[in-house]
Length: 585
Image (cartoon, rainbow, N blue to C red; front, side, top):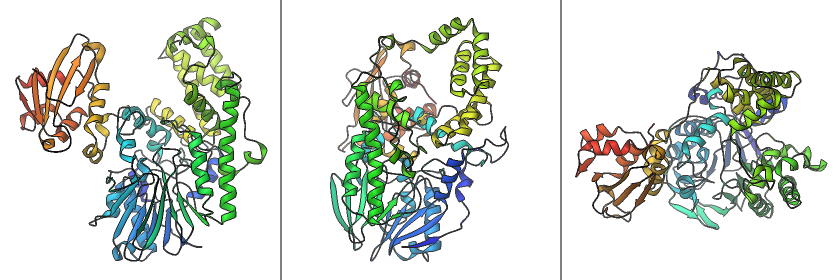
């Protein structure tokens, strides 16, 4: 295998969301173990075998390029059009402007996460390539409960900014890496919807290259891996990377079944691949025996944690007790692919417990959930008041018990939100924890909250209006109505009962419903795809306009005044009043 390395300036920094200097303190030292991981992300274009390349270190993912007889195939086109352009330029520089010589015939999405789909238009260019993905990719993008661009977009997007360290990426004194990626490149979406979908397996020849695309759920339910049987190259993501797997993330994640990971990795083991290309990670792994050993150890590590967690659950132990008992066995504990750079074993144990049994631990004390305020009041009373509680927090910090100090300081702030001493303790604990952890998610989240609380960055709560315009185009109406329903300020309008008709002119004559009845009924919004009977008024518009109004991207007064929305049967004020029942960005 021949490596082709590059030394191009990282254009990603131009897209950073924060200044590269000026933080206080100027530097938060990082765990050397995490720092050493950055070597894996050194920028390079690797030639895996003849005609198969991977670009590492230019984006959050490693887009793969395959050269066929009369065209090119791209796997996972990165997280934005800006990132994709960086990757395309790197390939052109090292492969004699390869994108000028041959058109892109196909783009393959391994799964729906943003860093694998949003650069598609850059590689598609003026061509019309096939877009290949699992049949559930669009559902994973837009349909509840765990979809990205759906009901919980604001909280997932906000937490994603924190756990990826997006606001401090430009400051090397704070940002090291993302654990399984070097950084993230901001920019608009160039997502294109699939034209060919995979159910269980698809054998396909594109530009003379034979592919086998196989469904392999793990981190998401729509993952496919790419197998090139003639060259024995396996391109993979989401079931294996250089970190203990993240059954959950600090951003929040939908159900990730460890048993799916095991089954999918075992499928990959059966291929006896000679080359394993990682969409997240460093250079390709070479050698069938080496790959087999690495994959076997990886799946064994995950199975060990899963099986032993369930074993202790069946003995009546709670997750907080199980984390005191389980650790990887010696033959796996030092494996470089099972270190906790991204996933973390104790968090995975809690998630496995939750996925099997839900929130209730089985202990009577947990049968009656107590509010955070009650907990803080009880804790303060136990030690003799808020002042003594703050003293205990300081003692915990002084003794090096930083997690306990952080928790006690939070109790103080619940009871006295302006307590300066508690803020100082909280921030000192956060900086200390960020310095010692080698889990990138933890470091980035801790420092993001620290910088935000000290007024050095501003994140706030990301709103539905931040959903990229390109994604809004493809958003199903059912998803839009779900967002509208969860945005209802129900407690303020419990006496309201109003039926509104909606007619979407661009959907008339299509397979989608054009008429809807929106019934706001004493604290809930029910939307039915039918003509409303005796509505208070009827809104006539196009689907994209209504989406953008609901999401807060368009001012309803403006779209009414310019004729993009017509209100029938009432004054436009009736529409404004109706929209006022819902949270707006």
